[in-house]
Image (tube, rainbow, N blue to C red; front, side, top):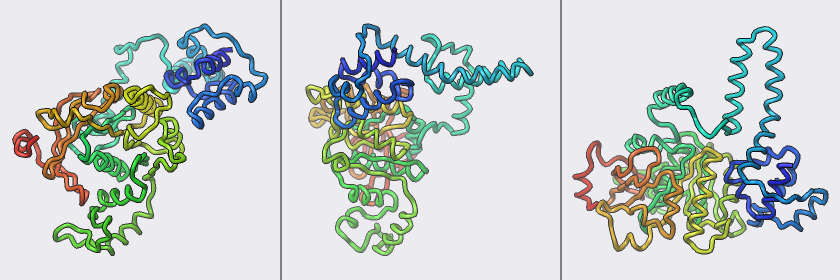
Length: 422
C-alpha cells in the first residue's frame, strides 16, 4: 500500500522530490518496481513526470488512492518494509548459531545489524549517541593517521591537501573566478591528478570538444606546449626542453594503453545542455570516481526554474544531492558576476556573494575555492569549507601553456602576494 501511495503522490505532484530528497531507490519498491522505474525513466528522457493518463495506459491494473500522509511517514514505512526483507534472513541464520554459542550469536547479530543500518542509511531515533559510538571516531581517526590526513582524492597540491584533506565523497566543490582566469584549466588539473592516481574521471565540457579537452590534458599530463599542439608546431618543449612531434607521437602511443578519462559534451545529449539527472546517468554508467562540470551555467534545470537565479540554485542543489547519494565528489565551475569586476576584494579573488545569479550555489557547495591569476602566479582562496577553516590562501606557479602548476614557495606567502598585486 505504501508503494502505491508514494507513486500516486509522485504522479499527483508531478515531482520526484520524495525520491531524490530522501535517497530512495527503485529497488526499495518490492512490488511496484516496474511502475517506479517507468516513472523515473520517463523523467530522465523527457524531463517531466508522466501524467496520470500516460501512466494508466501502461499500468491498467494499478490502483489509485488518495494520499494525505506526510512524506516522512511514507518514506519511513517504505524503508521499514525494505529492511524487513533483509532482516528475516539474518534472524534465520542466527537461530542456528544460538543453539551452539549464544554469546557468539549476539556478537554476530550486532555486526550484521550494524552493517544493515549502515547500508540502509537508517538510524533508530532522530539522534546519535556520540558517547556510546565513540569507537566510530577512533576508527575514523586511525584511518586519517594511515592516510596522513588525506581522506579523499588528493588535489595534487600539498598545501591544499593540508587544508582540505582532499576531495571527499560528499563534496560539491565550486571553483569561482572572473572571466578568462583559467577556471577550466584548473578543473582539468584537478581531474588529471585524480586520473594519474588511478581514479576514473568524467568531465562534462559545455563548450570544448573532446579533442580540445584532450590537447589540454596532454599539456597538463605531458607538459607539451598547448599553443604548439593547437598550431601544429613541431617544437613542443619549453626553453632547453627539446620535446617535439616525435616525443608527442611516443607519448600518445603510451597513453593509448590506459583508459578512464571520459568526456561528454552537449552533442552526447542530442545537442542539448544536459540536466543533472542525465549527466548522473552517464556518471553511473561509466563508473567514474569523480565528476567535473564545466560549468553550471551550461547545464539545464530539470525543475525548470522561472529565472537564472532559481535555475542555478536548482542545478547546484541537484548536484549536491548527487554527491550525497553516490558518495563521490563533484567539482563544478561558476562564474563571478560583473560586480566582481568593479569591486575587487583586497586579496584579488572573488567573494561568495560574487557568484553569478545565485547565492544558493555557494550555500549548496561544501567547498568554494576562488581563484585569480596575475603574471604567472595563481592564487587560490578558500572561501567556504564546511569541514575546516576558511580564508586560507595558496600561491602556485602557473605556466598553463606547458601545464606547470607547482608551489610558488613554502611557508608564509603574504609578502609575495603583495609583490604580485593580490
